[in-house]
Length: 273
Image 1 (spheres, helix red, strand yellow):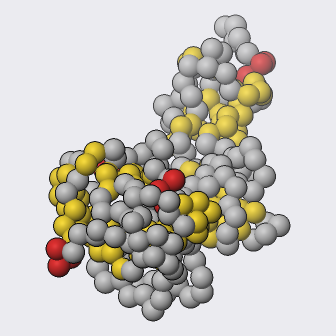
Image 2: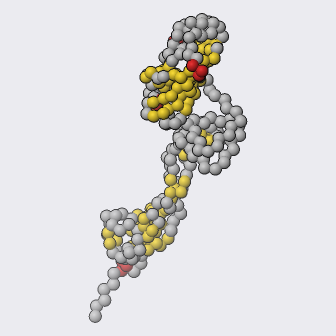
Image 3: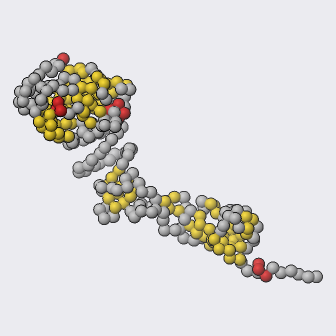
């Protein structure tokens, strides 16, 4: 009786890195990278196109794990990207960045400029104590917001109030005109040159716009505004619709704008001379 021995199978067969188009036989050994972890697998069934492991789960119908490798160093292509666990490996994104030279952490920012620099909407569900000076844009507070003092940026314009058509509240909702007004004027209140006030306000929200105008002529004043280029009705406190301005010094106008619906606003106004 003749006995045929496959001498090629007396020992394990090293087949290198696993390839989906290669046919493997029992006792073939391959390397396979699964989620940044490269491990060795031994075939337990003949087959083609049967990945040894996916997301950390071994395909035991065709393979057994022979030796688990260490996880690769990390993902990420830019210095400073913060690494995070991603399935069985690591991931990275340019929107989670740490600047080691300045100890700056950016969340949603590729180039952080502050110790903690966050771009986008942030939700804080528990009490947070902020000490020092901070800059916060587009803050939404659901609950009590206790502030000891607020310093508001003022857009100082070296021109007359009547020489400027638009108040861009995304730059600042407070504007100081340092040149004496030269005529009456009507300001248009908007977000900025590409954004309407209607787009940045939700129904039920209120915004106060303050305009400070240098004066040297009582015939120069403002008693109306437009919003996003459209006329609105102004309700002057105590029905004191301005008919004049100050002959010297400064006049202060405050427009309290409440959005009551889409492109619909209630405007309460005051003038202080």
